Image (cartoon, rainbow, N blue to C red):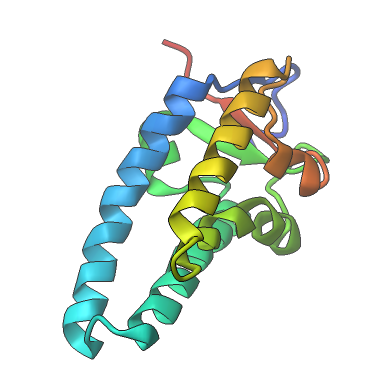
Length: 147
């Protein structure tokens, strides 16, 4: 049993701390993505590989460690429906929205709509679960460090 799963009543992470954690992760990913682009060029291949990198970053780190560097820095963790780390399948479903921005032309508008919808659903949920959490079977982001 992990330290996170032994917590009796996990405190849901607020939207503001989740956005800040995502911002840290975006900085890490931007550096990786620019480096990738410099290696292979900034064409269609870069768009596809960069999108895969983003999805893999969030999904693998959430499934394997329960958190990305941004979440770790802010004392947040992702829990699966059973209270442990999410499965890889749950993490992939939860983070699938991250690649919609790569759709040519309409992607940025679709991504903005997805982010807005997720933010609104997080704010309106007592457990601070967004639709992406519910689609993934009930994942949650919690605070493990209070203060």
